[in-house]
Length: 145
Image (cartoon, rainbow, N blue to C red):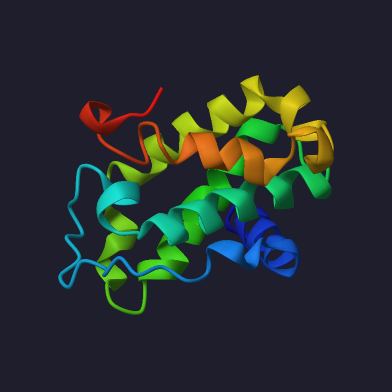
């Protein structure tokens, strides 16, 4: 399972969209390993988009099945990779796996859209632009519909 996540993350790093690299928003100084909203509290907006895009594009480009589980594993591995230097105990977070599963299910439901070329508004980056504005990347009170 971890190997799949590592493969997704590694393949996605080669294709990631770099236009979201610069982010003026500062990151939370103290990371709470027991966070109930880890994707929101641990990652900056740019990191959320990068983690999502890497997981979705990596899973799609590698033809991984089941797609939802591959995306979920990629989201979890990506988030942990972003925070692990500062928070090794974040691996024990009880919400990260279920929240990654939510994103995986949304990606599975949008599979045909993700399969469309970016030139016509499809692809992982387009999916993630919307996904990072919704739960579990943000609290439900902050969702953009």
